[in-house]
Amino acid sequence: MEIRNIISFLKVNELSSFSKAADALGYTQSNISSHISQLEKELCHPLFERFGKTIYLTEYGKTFLPHAYEIMHSVEQAKQSVCDDMTAIKELRIGILESLCTTYMPQVVADFHKMFPAINIIIKIGTFHDLSQMLNNNQIDFLWTFDRRIDSEMWTKVLEQEEEICVIASPRYTAHGKEHIGIRSLADATFIFTEQNCSYRNAFEQLLLSNDVQYNLFMEIGNTEIIKKFVNAGLCLSVLPYFSIKQDVENNHLKILQISDVSLHMYSQIFYHKNKFLTPVMREFLELLKKNNAFISAK
Image (tube, rainbow, N blue to C red; front, side):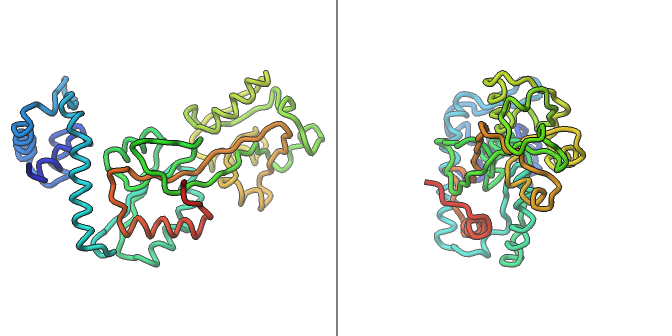
């Protein structure tokens, strides 16, 4: 069983296209078709099927997929065992949520580049769903997300950090003249939220619902910087992680509402795929994060 055929199989599965896989790997489409045919002949079963213009794994392909990842993992380990140094790796691929990227990545990337200027950092910003698919398809080395605690049989969690979720307002917001209020004081308040698939937005809305608190939705948008600008203008309230508003609060651009019966926390978490070899580059990046951001190693 040739390694190149397995690489072609994984790339076709990742991109759902023979032609795109050929472009990505520097082959012709007929080369890719030949690789897959050779693999199917060895395994005695078809690995892909077409419906219209879309390519899907067959049940045999789905069965072979984890074994293909394990084979490539072993190959990568074998390479690293004889060349365990930074010069063997040329890039580091990180999938991250937008709010985490805005807060943490500029300084982290700057520090990492000073230490390892020859290594190219590739950042992919997306939703948790999109980044999960990228991690499973080996399109990224790390997934950095913010959610409730996640446990996955397919992933290894390496770092974790608890963060408070805050209800924020303009510094001019009076909160009915009170310094400390209860959640029912938010009745009929106007909010701007992140998208509906956002974990902390969903948790906060469930909290409002469980307390029979009705509210007004002004807007929903994925960009936290835009959310903060609308809140600062006094148009609405919002809910964001503390790490994303810390500097704004310190600069008196936003304030945190002290709500006595609201206590929400989520976790910043970093994963790599269990079939992924933890390269020296990946290890150095994790050490830098622990140093700069007070992460703790996941248990």
